[in-house]
Image 1 (cartoon, one colour):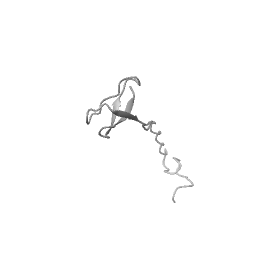
Image 2 (cartoon, one colour):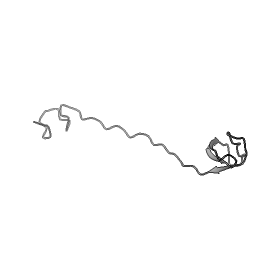
Image 3 (cartoon, one colour):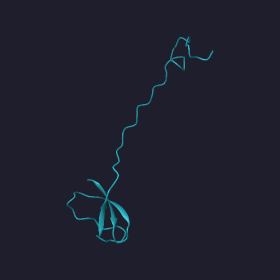
Image 4 (cartoon, one colour):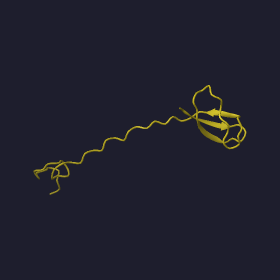
Length: 76
């Protein structure tokens, strides 16, 4: 069921309402009870999954992951 945004023409309050279909009767304003409401344009929100975490280097060196200790990037 889609969520729609409305604005009441009587009290100017904005509200959201779940609506079964476009053909259904417009909802009453929850603030004043008026049925004089207009559907508003809404911003579409899309959520994406979080990116996978970057794996930490494996081994003795924190720069390249070399376990041998002869890393050219290590601070000596």
